Image (cartoon, rainbow, N blue to C red; front, top):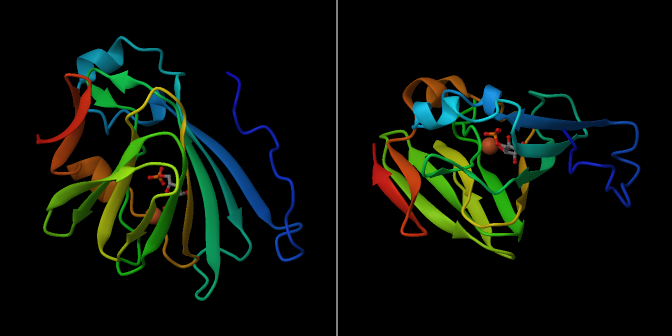
Length: 185
Ligand SMILES: O=P(O)(O)OC[C@H]1O[C@](O)(CO)[C@@H](O)[C@@H]1O
Ligand SMILES: [Fe+2]
């Protein structure tokens, strides 16, 4: 499977040189918990790449005071009528916030507070999203091209994936008559 994360870096400053730059992809086989329509999922190739992330970790994980940076590329596609999307997470240190800035494509940022109230914000090139602490976040590609966005988050934030993989978000984003719609599960 070819990756869009071919070395694309044009410049990094000395603070990043020799530091950890990580590239991962997440495929359907890694995302079994998150999609609603399991019958549709079973009919698809488990090796299908849903999204890729390039992350820059200039300091150790869980160290207070640093910042991490990443670019996420979500491929276009659906599982049943649910858009390709990220796993989604709360931060392990719940009150840590994050910025997302959309670079290309169309999408929705799905947000859920700790009382399970879920809402969504439209993502388009140039849109800036401040995700406040205590808020789970997931992004979905609602267009026909790659959705890419940059993210900036505190180095001690960590990821709590378990809460979302066990309980999900209270709403899912589906395609209805060609348009995204956030509906209760
Ligand atoms: O971590 P997930 O839920 O797979 O989503 C990927 C995105 O979220 C981050 O983990 C940051 O919160 C980034 O690495 C990336 O932008
Ligand atoms: Fe995050």
